[in-house]
Structures are given as structure tokens and as C-alpha cells.
Image 1 (tube, rainbow, N blue to C red):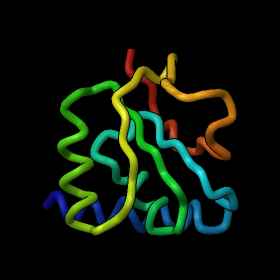
Image 2 (cartoon, helix red, strand yellow; image 1 turned 90 degrees about the vertical axis):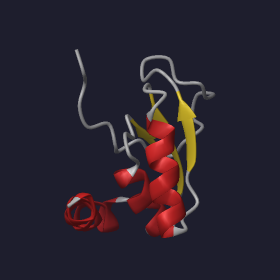
Image 3 (tube, rainbow, N blue to C red; image 1 turned 180 degrees about the vertical axis):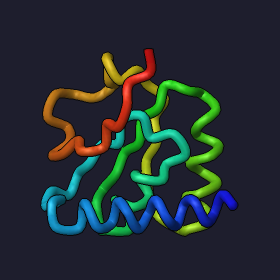
Image 4 (cartoon, rainbow, N blue to C red; image 1 turned 45 degrees about the horizontal axis):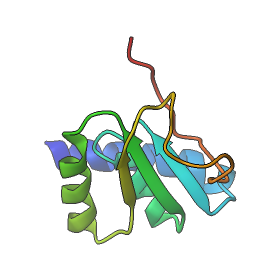
Amino acid sequence: MQILKFEEEKRHWQRIFTEALKEDTVIDVGTGPGIVALLFSELGQNVTGVDYSEGMPRNVLKNKEALGLPVNFRIGDAEKLPFAHNSFASNPAIRKKVS
């Protein structure tokens, strides 16, 4: 069931970003299991996923290894990202804020 959901969400994001995404360095803030980050990687982007949860790297690594895609991952706070200003050309992947 998890793979089916992944494929459905992947197709959704592919349609949205194939035309819109022209840059080659992307940050996926709140990456969770890495679904969107992995999609960007499939589209040829240099992707870094960031998530606050220390448990998420295991999910990202599992998905990344299964698909054989290069994605960097960092644990970090969306409000205090551990990167220099302008390190990424695009940040289209902030999806929701948890209160």
C-alpha cells in the first residue's frame, strides 16, 4: 500500500514540476520520507532534503536506496536552515507547517 501511495504522489508532483522547475539545485524543506526530494532527483535536480524529525533519515535512505537516486539529507529546523544564503536555486517544496 505504501508503494502505491508513493507512485500516486510521485505522478502528481511530476506533472506539476516538470515544466516549472528550471533550476538545478533544490531544497525540499520538510522532506518527510523524501517523496518529493526523490522526484526532483529523478527529474535531474541536485536535491537536498531537510526534516526536523531525526527518524526521517531512515525513511529517506530506504526510499533512496530502493530507487538508486542521489539525494542529500540533513536534519534541521525549517526556520533556521543549516545552509548559507542562496545555496539553492529553488525551494518549491515547503508543503505544510506543523503548529
